[in-house]
Image (cartoon, rainbow, N blue to C red; front, side, top):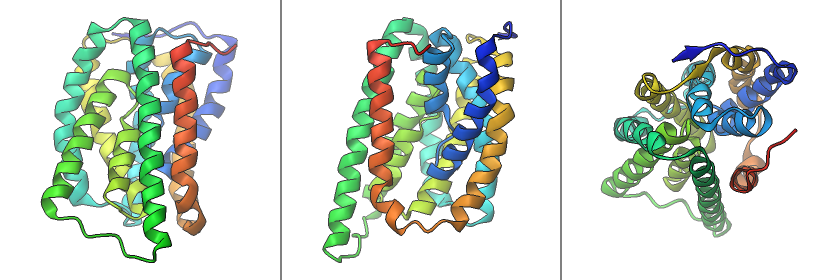
Amino acid sequence: MIEFSDIQSCYYILPFIGLVIGLFGTMVGGGGGFFFLPVLTLLIGVPMQTAVITSLVATLPICVVGSWGHWRRGNIDSKTALIFIVVGIIGAFAGAQITELLSERQLKVAFGVYSILIALNMIVSTRKKQETGNRNRKPKERPGIIRNAKSSFFGLFAGMITGTFGTSGTAPVIAGLFSLEIALKMVIGTSLLIVLCNTVFAIGAHFLVGRIDLTLVCFLTAGSAIGALAGPFLLAKAKLNKAEKTAGYWYAAIMAAIGVLMIIGKTIG
């Protein structure tokens, strides 16, 4: 169901929040849904089921603009992305069904636990990557069957997360791509394309049962589209040698913090 909510004073900060999320999302490989969901639930107080589908719709402009920008710069591994996307479609439809079975509180706690677990996974993956670099060794070339198995596992998980929480499944996608030891810029671009496809199918799965708040979508995307345009441009100019060493840790810390807030149910403001 599509609806328009009454405009509240706090809505006027949403374009700025959207700008930051759009910029950040296209620079780290996410559509922003992971951050839209806490903003909608913790800051605005939107019911969880409404926040899920609204977050997915608000994510689309970032995914489309960001994917296009990274495609032009050759930052997408199409072969790897295809595996994630195919199994992610299955996961997205399964996740939409899970959302209908859980209460609002259960969804918040589940999202919080998921955030903390995926943060721990990213810390371990980042540390392993650094240890490989410290030994001055080239990353091992994974056999095709192992790469495909990893891509399928993380792709299915990402699709389920997208359908269940409306977060685009960015975290498991990035964790999966990092585990394949792909260069950071390729991780970012490939992730955005995967997230885009997952989001489209998750919206389709939720459309008949979810409530899309177009007022919130308009306020969020007013800034996020601009941020999404700037992200790939700034990333192309950035030198990522030092960033590659710490990006995983920073991303994990942010995810863990959001996870804790969702579990304890603390509403901001």
